[in-house]
Image: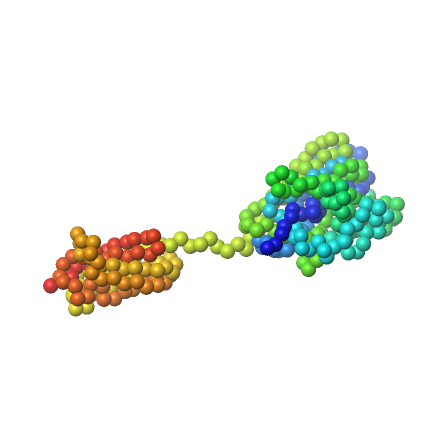
Length: 312
């Protein structure tokens, strides 16, 4: 049995802000976009999240990303990682074995920032994620702390608070996939939404939703149908009988019973494995006395009947 917990990797998606705030501001509207690879149900995944803003927007102060219920992390992968403590993170000395991904930020007026994402501890009761970024100028290095909070519905929220008063036009966070992975897709197919809630340095609010599609589920079982029931010729001789034909939407056990009209007494019967598609049974009504008969065909819970006459 495979145990699953909601992703510790929560902090995975937050908006990171690292640049100089512009003097004039556009409407505050950060955008969240999330991609998972592969998209197959239950598959271990790489998760790539991107937060974008216009260069003239207010900087983010707080970012909360709601993960969809169903996206999980594999408990059995945890022993493959160590934890980065807060002291190690602030010293920019997280163990290599605690790395769970990479990050890249494009900042207004500054060179691009690149860095790594590390798995923190959960001694405070809320698992941590550390994002450590650098643009090659040590005084501008950034250590960003994320906190994971589990929701009553079984999902989780990633929270980055008290972010620096600076604007990032693009922030890409890539949480690695197999073989050293944490996250798994939901075990059901469909559309699942990530929701980002943003608060600016001046208290403006914005929301952005990013759907992912999970596929690869087996097709729903085909409903059994029985169609095209026919007895030919309708007036058959007792010497040869008639041919019964019909179609099944899928393979099923078939039972055929012949009885005289007005009587429930079965005079002929047959049972066989019907195949998907066309089926034929010959000799229906053979050696029966002249008269009118009904041919009942059952497949699963379906019953169909056709008339048959045996001529003199």
